[in-house]
Length: 112
Length: 112
DNA sequence: CCGTCATATGTATACTTGTTCATATGTTTA
DNA sequence: TAAACATATGAACAAGTATACATATGACGG
Image 1: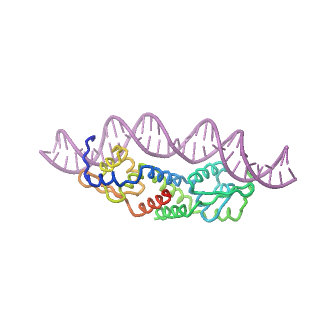
Image 2 (image 1 turned 90 degrees about the horizontal axis):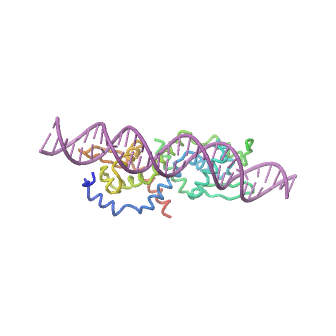
């Protein structure tokens, strides 16, 4: 299988030339990986309608503050949520509508 | 922090009532997790325009047949690709346009 | 049927990652 | 400034997973 002869050489050749940049594909996988955890999905859904502080997210979802904070960091690093400080609280919200679009589209696929 | 008092009790209460079904959120995370690997992303992109047999995918992407086959199984189990046999080859293609939509939307987000 | 080709599958391993516990940082209030 | 509160961070452990290698299954040609 080392001297493999493509069945469809034209398509293979076309892929060599037209595949998106390697780095972009990694970024794309990274993006989806962030969506690929139920804790983070829950957090994003919690923020779907309105902004919330960390404690309220943890309370609403029944998870520990630490766990929520760790995952918020992942979401923040990947620019999926933004935050602002308000006194002692830090208030998180979804970063842009892309996040809502992706969630909604995924939901459509799942709900069949 | 055990007797936590919500900052925004109304929002927390609303979340208790309005959060999507737990199981659906797990399914959603599972769906995105499948997209969250660069090998699988590459395979899906390879299938974006036209169907391909396993060997051609491996050849075009420069990966081993085994690795591609393993990942195709994941994609198949999650209904993201479908396949048909054609003689000795097995020809894979994207299962539906949801897959293309999700890839495209993710790409939009990444390409800024 | 036998050898060859295309693909699938089992297994072991190395790597990634989510959670918990403990603690640090930073803000407010008394 | 000390105590209380909200959040972040570090480290350790457990669980999941992608890959490579070896082998099995299945289809075709002679």
